[in-house]
View: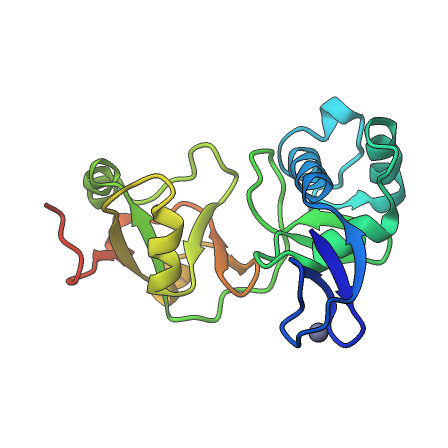
Amino acid sequence: MIRECPNHGYFRGEVCKCGETGRYVMNTERTERMGRFISGALRHFPDDLGLAMNQNGWVNIEVLLDVMKSRYPWASAQNLGALVESDKKSRYQISNNNIRARYGHSINVELDFLDNDLEFLYYGASQEEADIIKEMGVRPIRQRYIHLSTTYEKAIEAASYHSDNPVIFKLDAFGAMDDDVKMMIANEFIVLSEEIPPDYLEIMDNTSSE
Ligand SMILES: [Zn+2]
Protein backbone atom coordinates (compact mmCIF):
# COMPACT_ATOMS: atom_id res chain seq x y z
CA MET A 1 0.00 0.00 0.00
CA ILE A 2 0.94 3.65 -0.22
CA ARG A 3 0.87 5.95 2.79
CA GLU A 4 2.09 9.50 3.35
CA CYS A 5 4.57 10.37 6.09
CA PRO A 6 4.41 13.97 7.40
CA ASN A 7 8.23 14.09 7.29
CA HIS A 8 9.18 12.00 4.24
CA GLY A 9 6.24 12.11 1.85
CA TYR A 10 4.72 9.10 0.12
CA PHE A 11 6.06 5.63 0.91
CA ARG A 12 5.19 1.97 0.20
CA GLY A 13 4.21 -0.29 3.07
CA GLU A 14 2.75 0.11 6.56
CA VAL A 15 5.44 2.16 8.29
CA CYS A 16 7.85 4.85 7.08
CA LYS A 17 11.59 4.44 7.68
CA CYS A 18 11.22 6.94 10.54
CA GLY A 19 8.58 4.84 12.32
CA GLU A 20 5.56 7.05 11.43
CA THR A 21 2.54 5.23 10.07
CA GLY A 22 1.30 8.46 8.47
CA ARG A 23 -1.86 8.76 6.41
CA TYR A 24 -3.44 6.07 4.21
CA VAL A 25 -3.41 6.89 0.45
CA MET A 26 -4.02 3.74 -1.63
CA ASN A 27 -4.23 -0.02 -1.00
CA THR A 28 -1.92 -2.63 -2.54
CA GLU A 29 -4.42 -3.88 -5.12
CA ARG A 30 -5.11 -0.39 -6.47
CA THR A 31 -1.42 0.46 -6.47
CA GLU A 32 -0.71 -2.63 -8.59
CA ARG A 33 -3.62 -1.95 -10.95
CA MET A 34 -2.64 1.64 -11.49
CA GLY A 35 1.00 0.59 -11.94
CA ARG A 36 0.08 -1.94 -14.64
CA PHE A 37 -2.19 0.54 -16.35
CA ILE A 38 0.34 3.37 -16.62
CA SER A 39 3.10 0.94 -17.62
CA GLY A 40 0.98 -0.18 -20.59
CA ALA A 41 -0.16 3.35 -21.39
CA LEU A 42 3.25 5.01 -21.23
CA ARG A 43 5.51 2.21 -22.48
CA HIS A 44 3.58 -0.05 -24.83
CA PHE A 45 0.19 1.03 -26.23
CA PRO A 46 -0.72 4.73 -25.82
CA ASP A 47 -2.39 4.65 -29.26
CA ASP A 48 -4.78 1.87 -28.24
CA LEU A 49 -5.97 4.09 -25.38
CA GLY A 50 -6.25 7.17 -27.58
CA LEU A 51 -3.46 8.94 -25.73
CA ALA A 52 -1.46 11.56 -27.59
CA MET A 53 2.22 11.05 -26.79
CA ASN A 54 4.93 13.36 -28.06
CA GLN A 55 8.15 12.01 -29.51
CA ASN A 56 9.93 12.31 -26.15
CA GLY A 57 7.40 10.01 -24.52
CA TRP A 58 5.34 12.65 -22.67
CA VAL A 59 1.57 12.38 -22.14
CA ASN A 60 -0.64 15.04 -20.56
CA ILE A 61 -1.56 13.98 -17.00
CA GLU A 62 -5.19 15.18 -17.21
CA VAL A 63 -5.74 13.22 -20.40
CA LEU A 64 -4.17 10.10 -18.87
CA LEU A 65 -6.34 10.53 -15.76
CA ASP A 66 -9.52 10.82 -17.83
CA VAL A 67 -8.74 7.53 -19.58
CA MET A 68 -7.78 5.90 -16.29
CA LYS A 69 -10.93 7.12 -14.47
CA SER A 70 -13.13 5.58 -17.16
CA ARG A 71 -11.78 2.20 -16.01
CA TYR A 72 -10.90 2.94 -12.40
CA PRO A 73 -13.26 5.58 -10.98
CA TRP A 74 -11.14 5.79 -7.83
CA ALA A 75 -8.10 7.02 -9.76
CA SER A 76 -7.02 10.56 -8.87
CA ALA A 77 -4.18 12.94 -9.54
CA GLN A 78 -3.08 12.52 -5.96
CA ASN A 79 -2.98 8.71 -6.24
CA LEU A 80 -1.00 8.94 -9.43
CA GLY A 81 1.47 11.42 -7.93
CA ALA A 82 1.83 9.19 -4.85
CA LEU A 83 2.49 6.12 -7.01
CA VAL A 84 5.20 7.89 -9.03
CA GLU A 85 6.88 9.46 -6.00
CA SER A 86 6.94 6.29 -3.89
CA ASP A 87 8.22 4.05 -6.70
CA LYS A 88 11.62 2.71 -5.60
CA LYS A 89 12.60 1.93 -9.18
CA SER A 90 11.94 5.51 -10.38
CA ARG A 91 9.98 4.20 -13.36
CA TYR A 92 8.16 7.45 -14.13
CA GLN A 93 8.84 11.15 -14.41
CA ILE A 94 6.38 14.00 -13.90
CA SER A 95 7.16 17.47 -15.25
CA ASN A 96 4.63 20.33 -15.28
CA ASN A 97 1.40 18.76 -16.56
CA ASN A 98 3.05 15.79 -18.22
CA ILE A 99 4.15 12.30 -17.30
CA ARG A 100 6.37 9.72 -19.02
CA ALA A 101 8.08 6.41 -18.37
CA ARG A 102 11.82 6.76 -17.80
CA TYR A 103 12.58 3.36 -19.35
CA GLY A 104 10.99 0.12 -20.55
CA HIS A 105 9.47 1.40 -23.80
CA SER A 106 8.61 -1.01 -26.58
CA ILE A 107 7.21 1.87 -28.67
CA ASN A 108 9.41 4.13 -30.71
CA VAL A 109 10.22 7.15 -28.52
CA GLU A 110 13.27 9.41 -28.59
CA LEU A 111 14.10 10.05 -24.96
CA ASP A 112 16.14 13.13 -24.09
CA PHE A 113 17.83 12.47 -20.78
CA LEU A 114 21.33 13.72 -19.96
CA ASP A 115 24.28 11.85 -21.45
CA ASN A 116 25.77 9.03 -19.39
CA ASP A 117 28.72 10.16 -17.24
CA LEU A 118 29.91 6.78 -15.93
CA GLU A 119 33.04 5.24 -17.46
CA PHE A 120 31.86 1.65 -16.97
CA LEU A 121 28.38 0.16 -17.17
CA TYR A 122 27.14 -3.43 -16.80
CA TYR A 123 24.86 -5.75 -18.71
CA GLY A 124 23.62 -9.19 -17.71
CA ALA A 125 22.77 -11.92 -20.20
CA SER A 126 21.96 -15.61 -20.22
CA GLN A 127 24.72 -18.03 -21.33
CA GLU A 128 23.10 -18.37 -24.76
CA GLU A 129 22.73 -14.61 -25.21
CA ALA A 130 26.31 -14.08 -24.08
CA ASP A 131 27.66 -16.19 -26.96
CA ILE A 132 25.74 -14.06 -29.46
CA ILE A 133 26.74 -10.81 -27.76
CA LYS A 134 30.44 -11.70 -28.00
CA GLU A 135 30.01 -11.88 -31.79
CA MET A 136 27.34 -9.29 -32.51
CA GLY A 137 27.28 -6.90 -29.56
CA VAL A 138 24.06 -5.93 -27.78
CA ARG A 139 20.99 -4.95 -29.77
CA PRO A 140 17.63 -3.78 -28.48
CA ILE A 141 15.17 -6.54 -29.40
CA ARG A 142 11.77 -6.11 -27.79
CA GLN A 143 12.64 -2.77 -26.22
CA ARG A 144 13.32 0.62 -27.76
CA TYR A 145 16.64 0.96 -25.89
CA ILE A 146 19.11 -1.40 -24.28
CA HIS A 147 18.94 -1.15 -20.49
CA LEU A 148 22.39 -1.00 -18.90
CA SER A 149 23.00 -1.13 -15.16
CA THR A 150 25.05 1.46 -13.30
CA THR A 151 26.57 -1.18 -10.99
CA TYR A 152 27.60 -4.83 -11.20
CA GLU A 153 25.12 -5.73 -8.44
CA LYS A 154 22.23 -4.10 -10.30
CA ALA A 155 23.16 -6.00 -13.47
CA ILE A 156 23.00 -9.31 -11.56
CA GLU A 157 19.66 -8.30 -10.08
CA ALA A 158 18.20 -7.31 -13.46
CA ALA A 159 19.47 -10.43 -15.25
CA SER A 160 18.27 -12.73 -12.46
CA TYR A 161 14.66 -12.22 -13.59
CA HIS A 162 15.30 -14.25 -16.72
CA SER A 163 18.50 -16.21 -16.12
CA ASP A 164 19.59 -18.43 -13.20
CA ASN A 165 23.29 -17.98 -13.80
CA PRO A 166 23.75 -14.76 -15.75
CA VAL A 167 26.93 -13.68 -17.50
CA ILE A 168 27.82 -10.08 -16.68
CA PHE A 169 29.47 -7.90 -19.29
CA LYS A 170 31.48 -4.84 -18.32
CA LEU A 171 31.08 -2.09 -20.85
CA ASP A 172 33.57 0.60 -21.85
CA ALA A 173 30.91 3.31 -21.93
CA PHE A 174 33.20 6.22 -22.78
CA GLY A 175 34.72 4.23 -25.66
CA ALA A 176 31.30 3.40 -27.07
CA MET A 177 30.12 7.00 -26.67
CA ASP A 178 33.23 8.19 -28.54
CA ASP A 179 32.09 5.82 -31.28
CA ASP A 180 28.73 7.70 -31.43
CA VAL A 181 26.70 5.23 -29.39
CA LYS A 182 24.08 7.35 -27.59
CA MET A 183 23.77 6.61 -23.86
CA MET A 184 21.45 8.44 -21.47
CA ILE A 185 20.83 8.44 -17.71
CA ALA A 186 17.25 7.19 -17.13
CA ASN A 187 17.63 7.12 -13.34
CA GLU A 188 20.11 6.21 -10.60
CA PHE A 189 20.20 2.54 -11.68
CA ILE A 190 19.64 2.50 -15.43
CA VAL A 191 21.41 3.95 -18.46
CA LEU A 192 19.61 3.61 -21.80
CA SER A 193 21.67 2.87 -24.88
CA GLU A 194 21.44 2.37 -28.61
CA GLU A 195 23.08 -0.74 -30.15
CA ILE A 196 26.54 -1.50 -28.70
CA PRO A 197 29.29 -3.07 -30.88
CA PRO A 198 31.12 -6.09 -29.35
CA ASP A 199 34.46 -4.22 -29.12
CA TYR A 200 33.29 -2.33 -26.02
CA LEU A 201 32.04 -5.35 -24.12
CA GLU A 202 34.05 -7.66 -21.91
CA ILE A 203 32.87 -10.62 -19.83
CA MET A 204 33.80 -10.06 -16.22
CA ASP A 205 36.41 -12.41 -14.73
CA ASN A 206 34.37 -13.25 -11.67
CA THR A 207 31.54 -14.68 -13.72
CA SER A 208 31.92 -18.05 -15.33
CA SER A 209 30.62 -18.73 -18.80
CA GLU A 210 30.33 -22.44 -18.03
ZN1 LIG B 1 8.93 9.25 7.64
